[in-house]
Length: 459
Image (cartoon, rainbow, N blue to C red; front, side):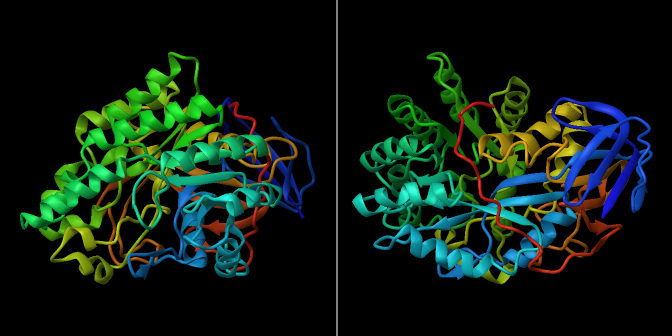
């Protein structure tokens, strides 16, 4: 099957021109102006942007948390991602303390295999680092799982200490991987949670007040220091605030590169939402939403090249699940839905409003995740030989976000009523039309696990 996309504005992290893209089978064959090719199908993309499929490297699908599970499965979550122009996600496998990485991988494979609609990969979250775990790192890398997530919070469940972090980094570096981190000071947060609960301060506002900026800034600095000492590539997930980004700025003064991911919500939403009584639970996530000044810092960080990726930390819960914490903020399941909205929000609020360029948009939403996590140039760009994961995007279409029209398996929207400019029209996954004019043409099981290469540490 061959497919020719004609007359679109082809945009990659470096290119921006009117041209054609020829696809043969699952990959891009060639690109150029006025291609004279006899294709099985021709799509006229006049007036549309032709961009690489988005890569969201931070999602939690069907994840066990606080006695329940996130409400999007690998089927519903990857389908919703496709509707929003994201053709690949990287989910997190969570090792259980006292159990092996292989056991955890088998559990997540059981959820994803045969169910995913879009392509996916895995990070391995290491929550119990010991000699047995160390021996499994090389095997995970050979399987194409080259990134290892750590938590500096959630003591007794997910957190590892600095001794374990240092040892893990040494082994991951040896095997050619990268260590990613949830960088917040768990001990300080646990103290503040207990303090507020003891004082009877139980509304969602106190979730925010239990995680002040200093808890993230300190942990980000400490992580950067350990990564610098070990020489292991390091990546901070969901960075939210000025203090944490300043820790990364300081690391550059010793010629260190720390990769940084922020999430769409931290660019657009702020902590005033926690003052909406219990309705603020919709935005209870960790780290919490921050201040307006932090949004300005993050947008600047994208343009300065300090913030490399915009992801989602998509971890949705039904409203009934959020009500578990109605009388105690510490019992509200953490997370919010955004997997379907990321690409359109980032275009409308970023490109359309002049905050970032089109090329920067593709860089942080598509290309850098592929580069950092060992998938480039198979994923994240439009180039000969690359997977034909392509989004046709109408930059002028106006539409409104709502729970009544989204495809995520959650009964509210974090962006209800937001009016956007720019909408996904057609999505190709490995050369096949997956989404077209609001309809999904792919069944579950079409999504493939994408093994990733060892990490070069350079983007």
